[in-house]
Image (cartoon, rainbow, N blue to C red; front, side, top):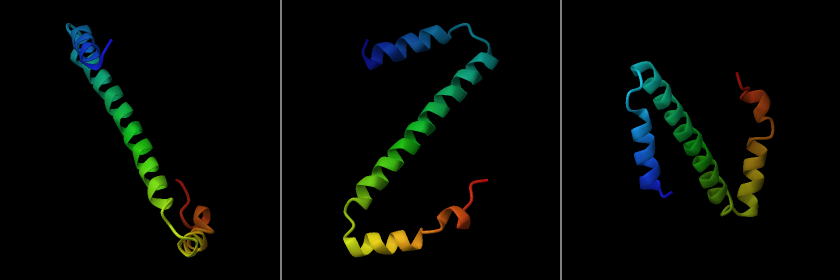
Length: 74
């Protein structure tokens, strides 16, 4: 199936569902999109970092040496 066919099948499959079920589907779609956006941001960052010269890389590594302590994940 191509993208258009899949979109149509998903749309048809939601007919008759309750508002609550549709909200769950929407939440799932938003979750998938946010996961993809995070992945794309990571790939863009990797591409940008690949253009750094040695001096810039060394400086960046020095700045982030203790980042886990400075920026703990809550």
